[in-house]
Length: 264
Ligand code: BT5
Image (cartoon, rainbow, N blue to C red; front, side, top):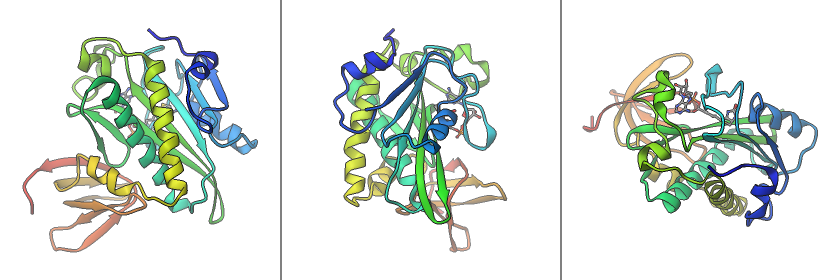
């Protein structure tokens, strides 16, 4: 199993912004929580916080992210983009696309993304992204993108995820170097972040990777459950849902369940 440390990560990383400042912990509460604190103290763009274990790994809405020590990539990256708060999802898009490319390039596995923040392999969740922003009024101070990826993980050790989750090692029947995967992910994110800074929108490429578009879906938001046809996503990552009556809804956050693949 590849050993993670600030030194080992630096030794093969070919970037000039992403991961130039590295904070590594063998065990930490949550990489997102620490990086938000560092961001508030002025940490530079591109700062990477990475851990071998999280004792309070977070998903969205107070959910937990589970990862036995040393099995996963658990990292957060700091961005200080020139965007508005409602454009922060663009960072989720570029990170998830870079993750998909890196896995495919390194392993040959086929990777799909599930709106709004999941990495899927073979119909199961292999990773998740948690994007959190710091704002002052309408100004976006920073964006922290947290990424959890099941690399060398036997899902049978996490009974609550059985049937729902997978890992690279489970799909390939062999272990994968977390370091090599990390380098590829960070390099891919840097390339995509540079395009984003040139105002090239990642949303069409992201939409093309989403496994839950052009389907009948059920979307659970904080306030309600809506069923409809997942028509597309807009540049800011909102899901465009066509309701049975033909009306369109733009949904910023929620969970999607696939219903059937037949058009309405
Ligand atoms: C996510 O939330 O999928 C975002 C996960 C982000 C985790 C990273 S790890 C580094 C950084 N630091 C943090 O503290 N967090 C980020 P959500 O869509 O809410 O999904 C959470 C749900 O995924 C849980 O309720 C479980 O059902 C499931 N889950 C938990 N651990 C999983 C795992 N290892 N693999 C697949 N599914 C998992």
